[in-house]
Image 1 (cartoon, rainbow, N blue to C red):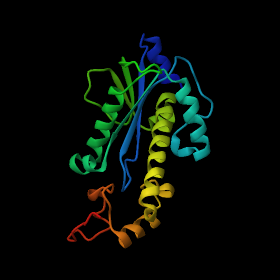
Image 2 (cartoon, rainbow, N blue to C red):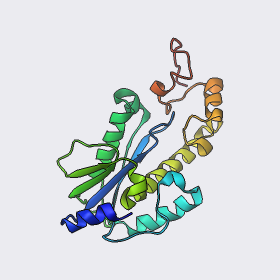
Image 3 (tube, one colour):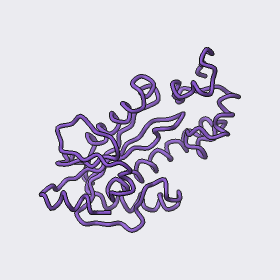
Image 4 (cartoon, rainbow, N blue to C red):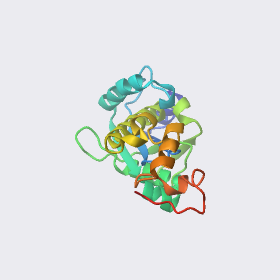
Length: 210
């Protein structure tokens, strides 16, 4: 999974930031992106698309990746921004923010000299490659997907304590049967994306946030 990074290292790039996001299809919560710069030639066993890993494996790899990375940045856009600019644009904004937030272990800002991005293209003055299914093809993007997934899952688990009726610890904000039923029973709250609920609620019905 290091083939893409190796080609860039061979061309003289040193700080290759790999970027992925999670939470794009959720009904509730933020969309979260991670940008990560990994050491040259480091291949961590088990790193893969976060969706293909068990929660226990993701948690384990989260710690290994964090301890190994040269720099990590997190960017997130909340449900209000998702509703305002749409999910695609919110995802790009989260990715840009993650790149801006790249810090090394000492808190120093790191500016990447190349980007590897899962699917999206960003309007930034940095060379970039946009890789479809990048989390399956690129070790760094897979590592970013794990960091973003665990970060967001833990966020939703905290929200579950405040709003237990929606079972966020279990569904992580996705439109599961239990989540949809809770929406119909209790209505949406402030962390729900109103623009994502039109298929659930009658379009002519006022969505009242409780």
